[in-house]
Length: 313
Image (tube, rainbow, N blue to C red; front, side):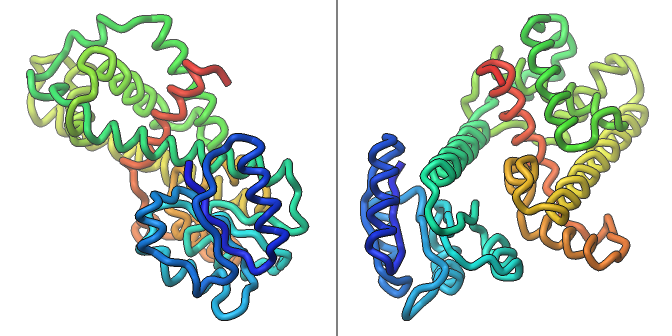
């Protein structure tokens, strides 16, 4: 990983660089003493993955800097500040920072946060690889016998991890959980049998395959369509309930570990923040007005379940 530090305090820059280098987290490739000195071309040339940035700085503060360069920077931001105002913290998160670390610097906290951000970057890169893969999964016709070739042991591990994550998201036992677990097993079997070589199938195609597997190859097209629609609705409801659960945790405590770990993994944080504001105001949220990315949710759920199942939790 490549790191860049922006802070007007030389001592803070030195402490952060020391933590990164001592713990072998990656390479320090540059630093600046205020936001106005941040050079986007330099960040791109040096392939910076993580920028640690102070909130209060002369010339251009951290909030304004992220607002200016965020759309142009593909990496991650970690904000460091002694300011504890909830409004500023919320604004920082809405602009896309991954974590907000309070000064004075706590070595253990910084180390933990950086490791979590590195894990998130690796997650997103794995998802990108998934996008380049699953080449021939849907090109050889419906594979109605695929489920018969499953490894029972691996399926059980992945299913158990999936159930654990759904429990963490506050939705275990709800309608739609079994649909999601079937999708996880489908993705894993596809990866094992085909390897990832191109783009994955469309989410709708996965629903169609699973409906055919469930109902059999002789049922009518209209019956398949009804099952696909019902399954999609159940899954979307689970995603929506997960959003509500995480937002409620965030309203209660920004530092809640489940909220910190999952909110910005499974959802765009702007959507989470919108839901938090609705909860605070007591207004009734509208499902039709909430933009949730079901595909992203499933991809993250699959990656996290696989990591827990085969790397151990």
